[in-house]
Length: 315
Ligand SMILES: CC(C)(COP(=O)(O)OP(=O)(O)OC[C@H]1O[C@@H](n2cnc3c(N)ncnc32)[C@H](O)[C@@H]1OP(=O)(O)O)[C@@H](O)C(=O)NCCC(=O)NCCS
Image (cartoon, rainbow, N blue to C red; front, side, top):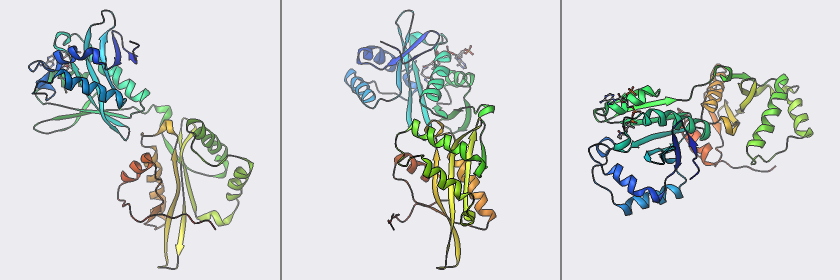
């Protein structure tokens, strides 16, 4: 079977019903595997086949590890609950293959796959406090403990932000228009969902906005990484005689698909928040995009409340 990815000695292949006897031998070994992963009751071949079918149907990131040289089964490794750029690591190595360096080899390869191929920025896990071997291996692979209870040790590893890619948030000024146009074009290359065209009329209109005094109440920021715009946020002030207040309206926030789940959106929003606070404005209102990714972002915004429904009226 063609491996999805590899390490020095290990092929990582999709889980398979053919391997169910190996899975059972591993997982039903209570003393050397089961007790470390909280599996006390033995599982049956039927249960295991259903598990394989479910994981394959879900296209879940779960792999069997086989020794490339001999074809021997080593164990399983998976990411559970993948959401918001993070996933929980689980690993089990069959008793006969433990303590031969496979865990120490597999975990960094899998974390690299999770970050480089699946785009995750954080991999976390929990281990039983008595599982000193696993904790030792995780530490060796770069995980750090971030919490501990009587029952569990919680560990995580974060994607490093390379120095040349470190993020800076700058105001959108007229001289940055070319950078923004490059961003808008890249956005469309990465995802074919953006409705409006980056044509001459659009460019002329944006250019003119930098000359127009009516736009003095517009606040826009750009997120730069390695000299390129990777995200933007655009807001405007609204003044209403209703209560004589000024609020801000969040018109647009967008991060390149390839740069999502790494805190760029939150950094843009944080900069906008600070700019508004400086102007004495304490409410920012947004229409919330219906797509699931955007919804997850909004629910993660601190000190915010989802309420009311928006309406778009053509004039
Ligand atoms: C935990 C597990 C994934 C590690 O993989 P592995 O291939 O057995 O581990 P490796 O051979 O790569 O490394 C073992 C390391 O643990 C060390 N170790 C062994 N027993 C230990 C103990 N009781 N305390 C501390 N370290 C121990 C070894 O000395 C070795 O360290 P070194 O490489 O720095 O010399 C594997 O043993 C396993 O699947 N165990 C059962 C299921 C399990 O515990 N899963 C994790 C649930 S959180």
